Image 1: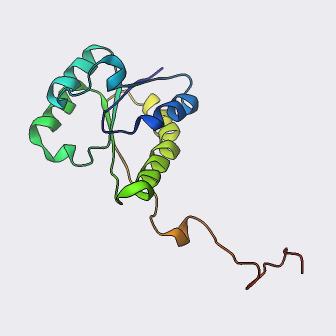
Image 2: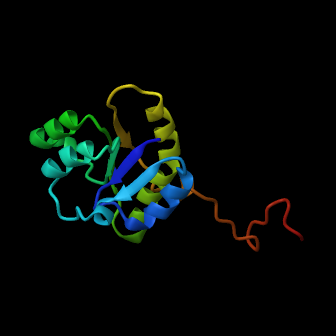
Length: 147
C-alpha cells in the first residue's frame, strides 16, 4: 500500500476520483492533515516522517529550485509532478484528466521499485482534433447515420 500526499496546488476535485481509482492506497490532501500553507521545504521532511511514499504536485518547476530538489531527494519520497499548460477551465480539465489517467499506471510502477523515482506527467494534447471527433450529420453524415 502506498501513501500519497497531494499538494495544496492540486485541485481537491481530483481526490475522490484518485481514491476510487487507487482503492488499496491512501490519498491525502495537505489541507486534510492541516498542512495547508506549509512551505514545501518543511512539508517534504514532515511527510516522509509521517510515512508518505509519494508527493503529487502541480508545481511543474519545483525541480528547478536547488533547495527544494535537495529536500525532495532527502525525503526519499517519489515526486510526481504535472503542469497546467492552458489557462482556465479547459486547462484545468486537461491537467486533471492527464493525472487521473496516469496515476493508476504510475502507482503500479512505483509499487515495483525499491528506491525513489521522479515522475513527470506530460499531459493531454490540448488540440481538440486529437481528443474527440465532432460531426455534423446534416452536412456529412457518417455511413451508419440513417438517411
